Image (cartoon, rainbow, N blue to C red):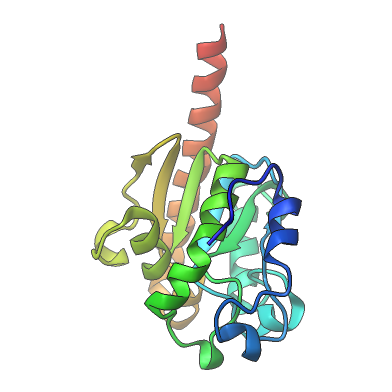
Length: 197
């Protein structure tokens, strides 16, 4: 839980500190807070750090991260132009699914990150992120590619890049969804500019 609102991502990161709020703090190597543009129009949310992220302290740096870079590049973006975070900030051992109690303890930090970044498009990567952000039990296969307006952001659920590594049929679907993400971000930006006139 957060102890109130924060003015910057840096102040939130300082508040989290060397987190030991749950048992994951005792088994992880590095806390993975998030990375990218703190004022990005597009924010991507995954479920939890994996082994490569635990070693580096950066989100999406393993094989799934390389595919994510390809997906971003395919629509003219770099990871420096988006913001990337996970529900959990620490790696569950063996890359197991996050436990409900772990999500409950960590979720406030992600909510604050979303509030501070204020993305126009919030991309949920895979089942856990989608179910958490949308408050649903529906699966990613049912929800992927269907935009949902949630507050000031448009949420677009997509497959997790790791899923496309194991199931190559999902690769083209992901590239298609990233074209939709770019169109949503551009459309939202154009709409805001038109409303300002």
